[in-house]
Figure 1 (cartoon, rainbow, N blue to C red):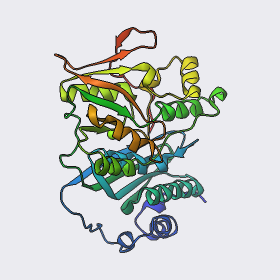
Figure 2 (tube, rainbow, N blue to C red; figure 1 turned 120 degrees about the vertical axis):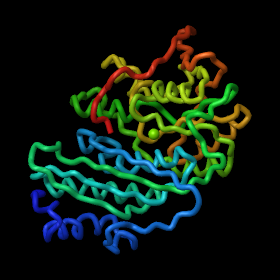
Figure 3 (cartoon, helix red, strand yellow; figure 1 turned 90 degrees about the vertical axis):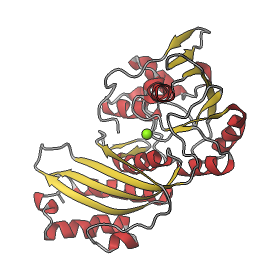
Length: 332
Ligand code: MG
């Protein structure tokens, strides 16, 4: 079956699509009320984030636009030291889209939301004429209760802090790039699309005093560390040999002339906290489902100007700048 303009008209065809696809997969008490807005029960300060998802291809090893639309927003809310609770989702569908494709995406979203423990409680669907968008775009927003006090922030890195990552860098970026170009050498890479809220919750409860949490998505580790250095007014020194990168990603980057430190991740976080807490944070991360390859990769230094310095494999040192322009559009 094909999605028709009628499916987004608000009339009978829309009702059918909502009942057959969205309600069936996302089913929960709040959504089922079918009122104009969801009414939420939240305590204390609330973190909110929104993101648009336009990735192509829609499906790739390790995930899909549906998993990204849930994980991306769950993770951004989590990075504020918050417990994500509710998501909204809005779909822009291209006329003529196969309804099986939509259903697969929605099923991926439902599974991802269940795994992350969040409910999709409100949504919207629009269908645009063929050619007005590419197949399917999704926007999600998420809210969650802030459970860290003080809440982590990109401006809270302090000289002497340790810098950790929760796993290997570049898997998502290389996977999408390889899929798009049909590169066979990268057959065994897969996106790291994953929810990080359980890891964040454990870091807050079992370690505490987390200065910065941020997920290195577009622009990768190098760009995200530059953002943090700028916000906090500090230097950050990274040991290249300490940054985990899967062998297949490194090999793919060599072929394509890319640097894994600039590739997008969709299930990894950077954690910056006092040095004396680094070992405790590392062992919590390693015991989490998506943190087995966590590592301490560097430290925060006092610096007159914000800078990120890489101590290279060769024993030298070079500045890591922010990503210039878009390495790859529609990566997430
Ligand atoms: Mg983020």
